[in-house]
Length: 295
Image (tube, rainbow, N blue to C red; front, side, top):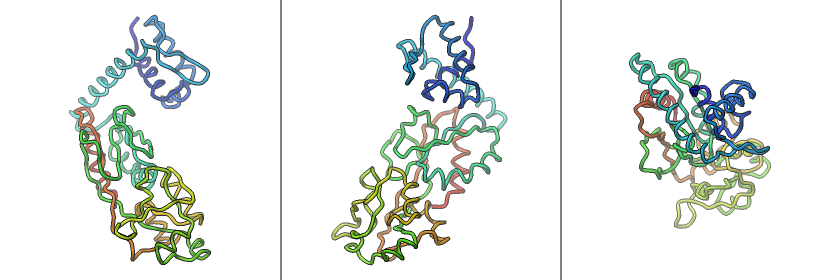
């Protein structure tokens, strides 16, 4: 009895999602349907591919070997579909895009309705990670990276540069006053990042350096969490302008040290591996988002 594509897809999605329940949600199928597909596949192969425990799934040695082959088969099918679509000059297929949650929320998600209207046959998967992801391991097609690029094996397209601003809520400024000097700033409640360390270097001159290392009174891993803390009046934060431009414009946040800031910008790139099967989808997405993002 031959293996079906649905069974291969169920197996790979279960492994990528981490559970049968998550895979069922992703595939828009029932949990029992995905479980049966996985069981049929194991029965046809006459071997266990996955060890099931109450807490997690773990690949067997045979499962590890089969997973690589299954991925190759599904990728080949996707490439075949894309090659046919290219002949019709209509990009189609799945496109996975990853970005830190603030960039995803403020710069990508607001434009996806318009993108889907232009390219209805492209199926988008949007993920958010605060740390740099491995494109191959996470099966990401395009990742948005803020800061200097480290991986020279990737293709990159510059999207602009992100300017930093130091902000607080009007309520906080009314309560504590706006700091007028670096020395006074240290006496305020400062909001910073848990990691990496360089994100807690604010663009203010400090002696011979053109940046100030701050010690946050409260720290978070996501810039969006910092933004919310600042909006709630907890303290002062240093955030990318693309996140807070609307807040400043509409008076929810006010800029402090505006005339003293060092103009230090973080480059923003879209990075990707070159792939013939992905070329159409990647190009149309990059062309589209580059025309929409304002940094």
